[in-house]
Image (cartoon, rainbow, N blue to C red):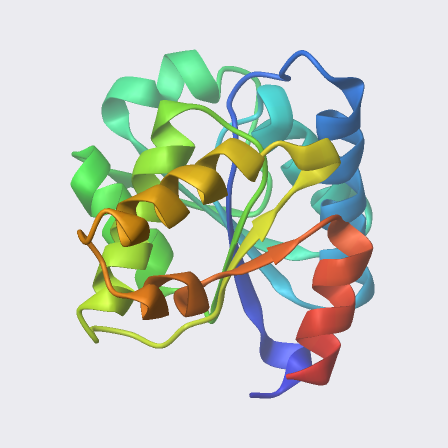
Length: 183
């Protein structure tokens, strides 16, 4: 895949989180996307980690596609739009449009919505419906409990061991950048 045409879908929180490192990572990822001349695919919000990511990408010249359902417009995108925007009727449509426009999936810290998005693309990969790279960006160990839960699911016989091979855990944005540069 050509690095200059890569579209990176980022799932992340619509809140800033408790650790300032999460916002800093989002800004670094937005800047990295722009520096690599990649396209950001995101949830079209201008709040929380999502807003910091989009703002940094936009400020540094990245192209972006934001996808948001109508019921979240006032809540997650009250101030502005970074790049192009698609408004969907449902969350399911949002996730489908984001996924279809992405070459790679990356997950920054986030809440239930980010977990839902991660597990959906992980499940699709497990079922052989796609082979797009999936990355968990483990800022200061944020995803360690999730990885332990996935390992537990495997140990308890509810998934094959190959489930762990369907995503990569990277400690920070620099490690994500290095991994993508190698692919």
